[in-house]
Length: 317
Image 1 (tube, rainbow, N blue to C red):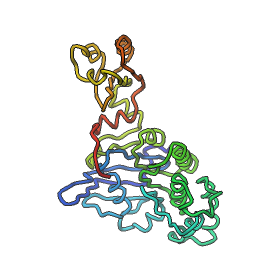
Image 2: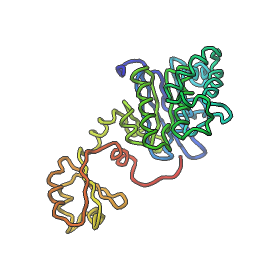
Image 3: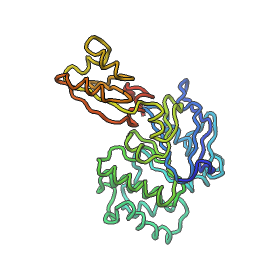
Image 4: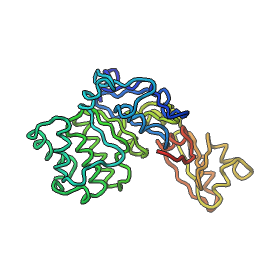
């Protein structure tokens, strides 16, 4: 990854988008640099997908501006899109065409000659681990295969920057790990930049050099995953569950000693989370309590997400 002082490939400045009286993107700014993966995380309805649509010129911004490769959107939309690759939340593969044909047809949208498209298609299918499915149609593919084909199609124009909107949603663990491997290759071996929205915190922590956390359309945090965790969280977590665990979520006669040993205590469902700088005394105090089960672990990105955006389930996309 290049130094952050390098000129950004892509930059959004003070984006605002309103629908009626609702502001869904509110003064949002970020930049993407060569050879990095920037993650955008936030709850449902936080404005992530709307932001990507503004970046692509699919939705007009009410305020702010987008620039890429020294060009401006939407004035230079055609030239910008020629250097972008996009994978949306939902597959838009042509069901009537084979895997190879999907790539060849898409290549024509970028003005690539038939000979160039024919040369690139086998390499892209090999990259996506789909060489054996070259003649298969999308209906014959698993969910993971379809997502990899969508990624291969997004690479047909050899883009400098990929915009990926929840690219692994709905995939099983094996398919997700293969997708992660391919995305890491694009950055580490090919030097491409990626903007990635995701609901999977392990995915964000594994793939992203930097993260922005978005809530209610605003950026509420930005930084490297481990730096954000260190900045906002206690380093150790004890999860407590089992008989009587929820009764310990609030300080009282039976839980005062535990609360005194924790910096912060939260409850989610039937689990109570004790956040602390050193869990040894807390674990010792819990050892004598019958019927309780505990898990001691380091703080992670999911803890950060929940602290910054809350534990309430939200509806919407």
